[in-house]
Image 1 (cartoon, rainbow, N blue to C red):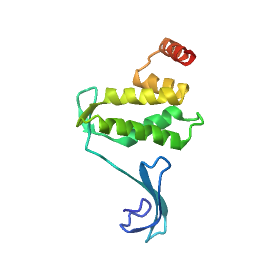
Image 2: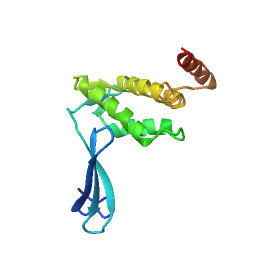
Image 3: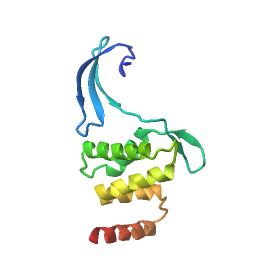
Image 4: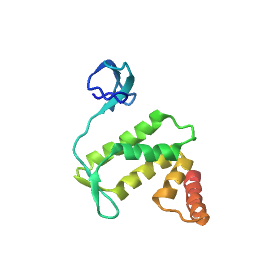
Length: 153
């Protein structure tokens, strides 16, 4: 493992343990050269999955893109990092268990929307505003009214 501080190729594993949801192994490492400490995560990858974007371009599935989007939507909402990791792990499992080599970005976006709807209504609206490309305040009002209706039933 390459050190993120000095780029040295040798480091020692100081501690290994599973994450709380047991979907990854968390490893604390220390660089032999500079002594810097950092954390890595190992996750199971069932197969290589290609994401088909809305412009028909293709790129490899990247879990970190979902993590960044969900974390941004949940920012300042009091949602624990562990909850975000569980949501993203669930979405990754859904994508991998579809049995398809290619998955549309729209399908992944809907999975994120479903997960955020259950986690936090404000984060759900934030994500939807970007995902559904809201252009004016009326778009927010219309969408928020449907969220209120869902929460009341």
